[in-house]
Image (tube, rainbow, N blue to C red; front, side, top):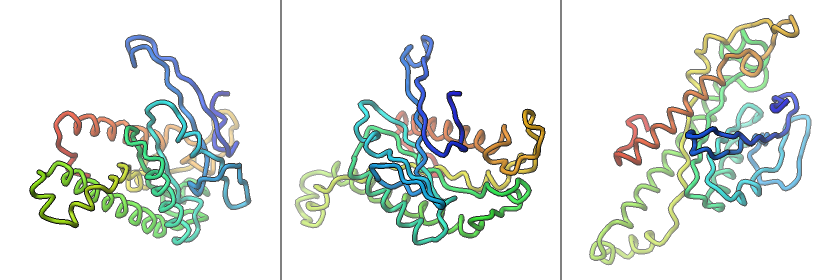
Amino acid sequence: EDYPGHKTMGLWNRVVDCPYPYNNGESFEISFVRNDNLNGNNDAEVTQENVDFPWIQNYASYNGRTLLVASTGAHQHHVNAYRAAVDNFVTMMDQVNRNDDIIVYRTAAPGHRDCSESTAGRTDTVGVDKFTDYNNYMLGKLHERDRVRRNHDQMLKSNTEVISSSPSVTSMSHLPSPVEIRPMDIFPMTLLHPHGKEGVSTNMKKKLHDCQHDYLPGPPDGWNHMLYTTLVDLVNEKRTGERHPLW
């Protein structure tokens, strides 16, 4: 009842109350918004191809630290459309400039049609090779952004004498640092997940045709474990000052 599921093709939210001492006894809110193009539309846009509910204004105006997990790809049928969507998403994150938030971008993987096709790395809408192209583009983009951000932060820590000796460095030091967007690459593990096969619904007593969404436990549970590990890595990096070797 609290979680309508993907078949409602929309949005939901829920407040979770934490018993003390977890989260110091404070509640937190979980929100889901489906926006296939990650765009900044103000009104819901639902077509045969895409579902885009508004989200950016609520996110930008939220009074509190936020963990934002974003993704697109499964409903993008052309590379140029995918690149435009993620480019626009990154631009919006820099414009909103919520540096205290944790922003995670999840890569995409096949998951539609019937489950045996998912195991074989096939989908009825976007082929596995196109998913690879999508993910490589976004991962490359995020790694480049991280390089620029780290260089920017390093320049701000440089001594005044070094900065003043190079006009180009001086001008760059006044530019805002790109907002950190941490990638979470679920693509390889999803293709190899053991539950990528046909199952039988315990309620409906019929075959399921989309294991990534309907056959649980399944790939999304593995994604949750990866998200948790990503957050643990972030805490360790803050504590030690050293980045995870895989990032």
